Each structure stands twice: as C-alpha cells, then as structure tokens.
Amino acid sequence: MSVEYKDYYKLLGVSKTAGQEEISKAFKKLARKHHPDLNPNDPEAEKKFKEFNEAYEVLKDPEKRKLYDSLGPNWQHGQNFQRPSGFEGGGYHFSNGGQQFDAGAFSDFFETIFGGAGGGGGRGRFERGGSFSDLGGGFGGFGGGYSPGPTRGSDANATLELTLEEAYKGGAKAITLQEQTIGPDGSPRLGTKTLNVNIPSGVREGGKIRLSGQGNPGRAGGRAGDLYLKVKILPHALFKLEDGNVILDLPLAPWEAALGAKVRVPTLDGAVEMNIPAGSSSGRKLRLSGKGLGGQGKRGDQLVRLMVQVPPSATDEQRELWEKLAAASSDFSPRSF
Image 1 (cartoon, rainbow, N blue to C red):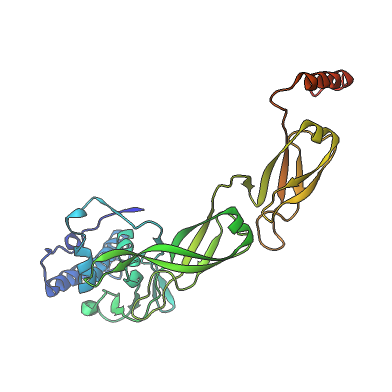
Image 2 (image 1 turned 180 degrees about the horizontal axis):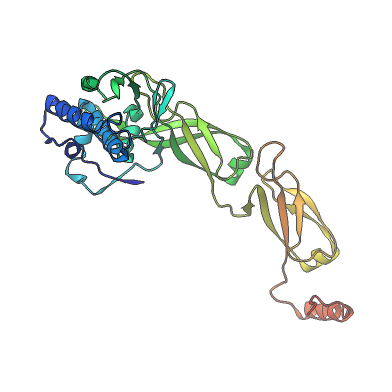
C-alpha cells in the first residue's frame, strides 16, 4: 500500500529547524482559528484542524519527530510512501466520554509510520468543555486538552498461506512475519517475529484467524491490538476448490466406465475405495460426503468427476475388438442431433 507524503512542517508553517516553543505557538494559533466549536458548519475547518493536530502530535514528540525526520530526502512532498509488506494497520477513533466525535482517523501516512512502529496507533481522547486558551495543553483537544491515558494499539492484517491439507486438517503451525520496529537510534527498521497459530480444521479460503494482542503496540501502557490472518489456500496438484467442495478428476478406462469398477480414489483424509457404477459417462460426478472444507456440521464434500480416457493407440487385435464392439452396439448413439 502506498500513501501520500505529508509535510508536517509546511502544515504548521514552521521550518525544519524550529524549536518546540515555535512549533507550539504555531499550532495554538492555527488550532484556535480552525477549532470545530468556532466553525460548527465548516467541514473544511474541521479537516484542517485534524491535520494540524496530526502534525503537532508528531512534531511535539522528540521520538516521533526524529522518526519522521529520518525519512529525509528520500520522501519529498508529493511522492508516495510504501508500507512494509504483510501488514495493514487499523483505524483510529476519538471519543469524548458518552459523546462520539468522528475525528476521521489520522491519515494513512501517519498510520504507516507510527501504526506499526511502536507509536501506539496515535489514538487520543478529546474532552469538551473549558476555554480555548487551554489549547496549549497538548493535543489540541476541544478545549480540555489531550488525555494521555493508556490507549489500545491498532489491529493489523496479514496473509496466511496454507496447503489444502493444512486447511483441511487444521492444527498448530509456526509462522514468521515481518514487522516494523524502532531501533535503538530511533530510526525505523524491519524485523521478524515467529508466532504459533492454531488453524481451525476445515478453514476456507478467505477465512480469518484472530491472534489476540499480536497487533500494533498500545500507547502509555495500553494493550496491543489484534492480528488478523486472512487464509489463502495454495494450488494443489490433484484437487481444485469450489466453495467448500473439493473437486477431483478421476481418469477411467472405457471398460471401467462401461462395466463398472472399484477404484482407489485419493482424498484429503487418505485414499478410499469407490464403486464406479456400470454405464458411467465421462463428466459424471460422484460424491464423498464430508470430505471438503468447512467447520463441523458445515463441511463440504469431495466431488469425483469421472473422465473416460481412451488408449492413445491400439494393436491390430485391440482394433479388431473395438470394431466388434462398435458393430454389436449399432443401436447406441452418443449424440442426439
């Protein structure tokens, strides 16, 4: 996922060398002017107010500012910023006691840098009340300032690739994921972590597995978000998937289809003996109940599609026998047109 770069210095109208006092003054001036309570019917003012809050949240915090500055000349205004592969952060929500204020979340750019980098998801609580002069208190909060209490980290998403056998049987599986962390010098870096996942038996393509507390870290002691693994089932050499059903093409000799036969058929549970009814045509489907994917009581089936195969060549003796069979079957036509 790529997102648009945001120039927080330009948003607040300060230079990159500005001190904390200059940044704080610039923010308070802009926040007072565009405060939603002073502009109740102006969506553009509210949008700008959110942008100023986001910029100030980063530039007032030495650690966040250092991380933001480390992007350096590689990410100029207008270019795209690429998120590390494998994860997508969750949203951010602001509330004010019993009232809900939709702050529209911090931007994707903020989330990309801080959502998975130990920034805690950037979530805050705004409290109404008080005077606008209180804006000097931190996050710009609607008169009451920013409440620095513990906040839950945002959720993350990743793809979990499974073989068809793993999806069918379920069980424990160790997986390694890439994550973004903050190094000792404060700069972002990529690392890996290994997790043990309990795969539900019969999980289907697109199913989600939740790992509690394995998402992005919380802030100020808040608990971490959750990690959601979206299942992707890898292609199989023998079987195809059709919703929860497993499809197998079973080659048959003409005499097996004509006379009937007992044939050994592979399944995800191991091979079974299947009776092929006499007079079976190519394309006919036979069913093995409960041999597909899905939870208990909702499992799909295995459908065995018969595929009659003719020998590629025939000896003189075989050809003579085919001709005798054709003559003896003159009252049968496979075509109705």
